[in-house]
Length: 185
Image (cartoon, rainbow, N blue to C red):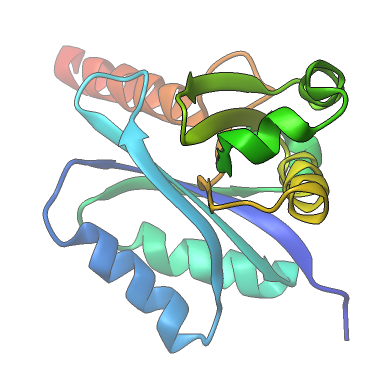
């Protein structure tokens, strides 16, 4: 059996009520755990982009993408490995201000992890860190060991391909070209 790989599945659709439920049901039926999920508007007007990460083998991810692609409201679905993408996550850390100020080299800690202070008041400090999973996890672990973390949240992955344009743009351009050639015939 092959080792499981982390795949990023990208789904383009119109903003349709109920589509998220339909998409997640594909994973449930195959007993696949979604690691991260984010949905937002894309660079293409009126088109939304789902970014889902899942550990599985390539045969399984191909089948999942084909099944998702068959949905009426889905324009196109793709899968990629980390090497084909530029990706990030964002994490927020809430810490006790008195404890935070006890750290000997607060500035060094923030610089080391390329973190930012979003808010500070007499009760708490909120730090922000963007990066890959391991980077946000490393800061969480360091803070947990040194002073404790009151609250922690990490977003789902956001990702773009390393290619010049979205793969959907190429597909839409090809469809437009076909329609224009059919109109002239």
